[in-house]
Length: 132
Image (cartoon, rainbow, N blue to C red):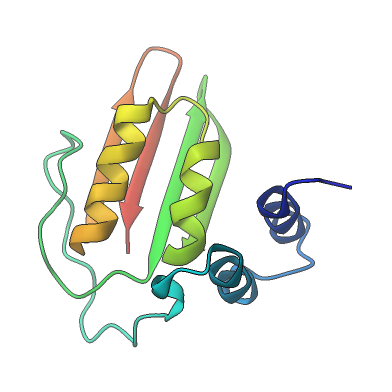
């Protein structure tokens, strides 16, 4: 059994024993933070993404989920859509991201932007993170 509650929670979501929506309030309770409240339904679709430079697309309707896609040698190895509360904590476990990149995504989450917030491509694979 995992000794870290976050690892256990992420494992339960990965195994399908909990949905990401069910895990979000548990995560917020573990954190004790005020961002436990989910945003209301978005009144408009997310704004289209930027130029692929990895810069946030800009303010729009508040995002409700974090989309993480990781490809390795043309094969998708991670394809997740998580509630923002859970996504904030899962960022540290995304393979291939530097600490600076994680902080850029966290800053985008805090500012309320939607659309692509980070795109990292190299010869072996890619990481794409967007706020929907």
